Image (cartoon, rainbow, N blue to C red; front, side, top):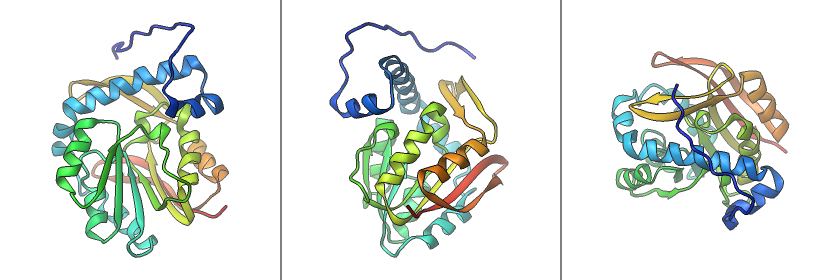
Length: 235
């Protein structure tokens, strides 16, 4: 692994207004500066190699999971694809099923491609850690192959924010790695963060947030092994 960050810590930090509530409730100034450097690295890396990665990956490997998700949603429901990448396969699949799709990704390049690939969707360059959609906006949120690019210390906060944005009885789908880990490595020639809680901790976070578990377990898809959760907002 190679070091990819250089930090400048100083006493007077100018914090964008959209982050102020997050800072007050969740993050220290030190943590804020740290994760902003991490997110900048992830954004730049996906801007450079994201399209190559998408073309390389097996985009059919979790089609059955998308089918299960779609069957749990109301017809023509509002769905958030959190970490949408180029919009394929998740946003494209859901749009073809008649759902109203909103996608967010930290990478400007990925969002540009998503808009081209799924013109009927709505796509925004946003940081998943600071999503500010109104309460009860979505019938479902799906966040797959994404959480491990966000520091694991923030996963519980993200899940609480997902809970806030999902309507009552709405559906959440996430996946993570199967081992607790955190570190940087080279990914398609660019530096990338990999950060996971263990499945037991992730499951506890989802339950504590107010979701009822529909399914949880380790799945091997396309030669890869990840931990998946399907859950419903009940409280």
